Image 1 (cartoon, rainbow, N blue to C red):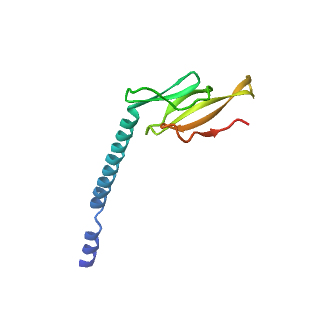
Image 2: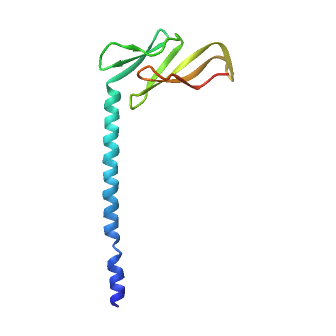
Image 3: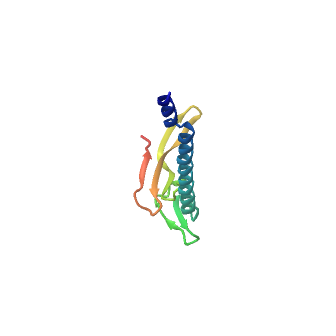
Length: 124
């Protein structure tokens, strides 16, 4: 009988559940703090397309030109503020669609400091 009591006393599901809740709540707090930090970083930046080029503005300063192709549009700033995705038109190429031919375009990304422009989806 004593042996069964000792085994039951070792298994404490309520304690395990409480430990799990503490672990999860700490993780949630860490995730929320990280998201708040990234939102703050991105909140001080904005991106625009003007004259077919992409510009980034940081904290109301003068806009910095990121691209110079004259064919770029639809910029989107990543939540962490480090990358900008945008669409680049491909002149002279058409893509056949169910609704007719459309101008070809590519999906690109560039760092918000203007380095590492990379084509993500190319038109062939």
